[in-house]
Length: 165
Image (tube, rainbow, N blue to C red):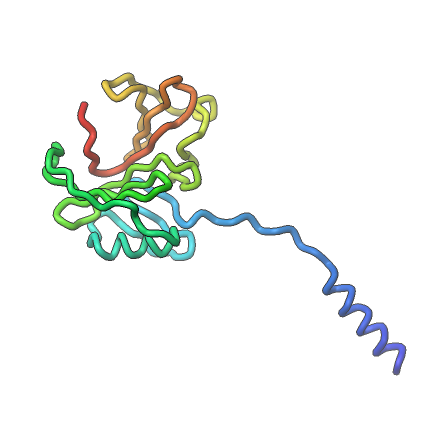
């Protein structure tokens, strides 16, 4: 009986020594053509949601608040309130409703497998168009802009923005 007990204790101790590979950290959310999909929930933060709730939720997900919330009065769609985070994310609101996002943050993925910083050569299925902003592309409701060397994604957005063309 003592041998069985000793073998059991040895097995338990050895099992505790086994290591498992670290799981990769999930991004806090994925930006989509219709808003934001948090990684920890099946619920979406869709365009049209209230500004206060969206900013509070994104602040919790990013574990930091916006560095600036400002209203730009001269946007083509009318006055737009923009909440900007230090990492390169901006959320756009019209009349206190979430209406769009803009991101230059490579750590925040965009639906479809794209993200700022991604190389142009990794986007063979995308067509580009030269505009007054630069070399733009669209993937459904999501748009993007290449950097000045046209080699990687500089910026991505969906919904209402305050870009002048």
